[in-house]
Length: 151
Image 1 (cartoon, rainbow, N blue to C red):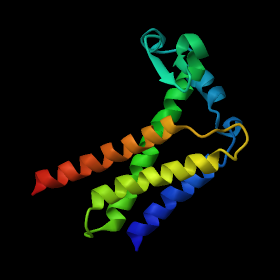
Image 2: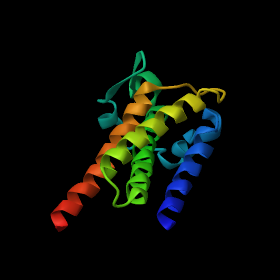
Image 3: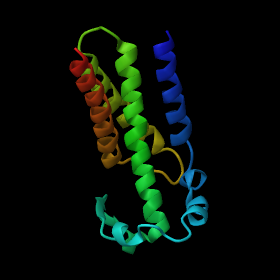
Image 4: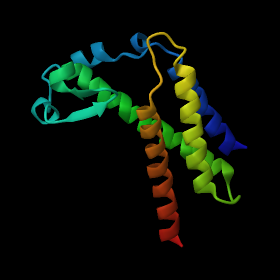
């Protein structure tokens, strides 16, 4: 029962966060205070990330918005990785736990992006679903690999 409770908590955090507008989620003021000296600006300016019909970069968005973009995508990756682990461990010793966790997480990501499209200032993104699913694959893959090493 506790394993399912952890999954429910992860899902509640997801529902709350994806119901927030971009402005409610923005961490730009905090980044501007914390990263006032713009650490790693030179290194980050080398990154050009294709996203939707544009390329996201320091040059295109500015340092702080680019850092916020990276944090938001990392949050997708880690958050959905945690959801996948929640599914994996809650599923237990039933058949195909890794596959079930990854596919289940991908379905949750698709549904979340669709639901999020009804939030003002937010839109659906297939690229976010891809980041979410890759997070699930990596997190579950690490657990499966570690479990195999232990045997």
